[in-house]
Length: 423
Image (cartoon, rainbow, N blue to C red; front, side):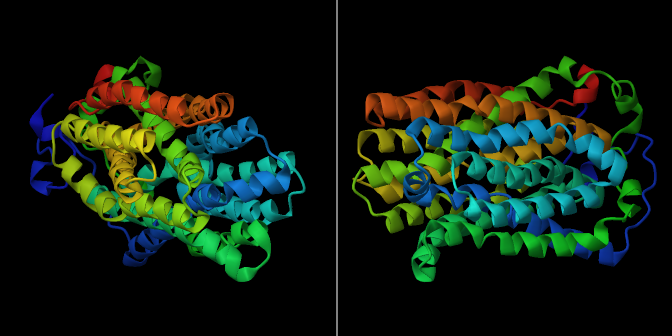
């Protein structure tokens, strides 16, 4: 692999010998609107999940939900992301990525509006699935949107929308309980209020529904070598499989943290307000790191060292939760917040492991959809182990053990490779 084929932020490292099609300049309004749309979409990609964690006890009591069913609920995001994520590339080819993301924001709005009216667990799960379907297609297309509209600024723009994603995640975790208390209508209104920012995001994406100018903007990074592998099966790529496994294992950790960490703190005697605030601290850590980390990763030939550093923080955070959750809760929240930055890292790696926009679509869909399938059992197993053992020792020990394969897959996925060469 030639060094000059690396996809970085530095324009001077762009291949000079490859025959690259000339990209038509995008209208200024399109780029401005695309940035605004990316930021608003990213803000809405996690509140459906993180608003639920601090209120999980109230939701379980209100719906008569068992521990195993609550574990299933924390795995619904991964299941929906896997199921609907596979459809995202086909929908984007047929209707355009802007139209699909706009529809995704509309689905989030509808699901979050319907969820408070659920009279039982099945209806609550169905409404959640509707919102999560919108999140799923938007999740897959975020790296694609960046590649198409900003092929020369992938690290910077990925950092911006990753930062917005972390901000939305943290905001929902921090204010859901205080909002619920302030509005005085129980958990239902506290969850339903998050439909408002999703509706705003859908409105911003409307002008981009019929935009096709970005199709000429994402020229291949190295067109000639990419052509030989463009139509090969993505399942033949070892890098794609490692990316999917790394995505899935880091997703397992993230959804266990978002879904169960507040309950771990509450079971240790910490109040609901403080537990929600601790989850917010974990998510807030991703705001500055999600902006800086993609830019650092994009300048490195291999992202393995970053993967290993994040793994160390992850082990330390879970070990603290296992040994003494109430002794230093802020420290455990901070450590796991750093570890959760594996998500913007893997998004950056997806954009760097293919030479073309079409390759990024395929890799993003495969890695995210397969990865979310991998992450489904984790939160369910954590809930079941908690119910059967009556404590959090076994579930947290499982999470610590999973760090090892996560780090191995991340190091292998972070090697300086292009999927086209493996196809």
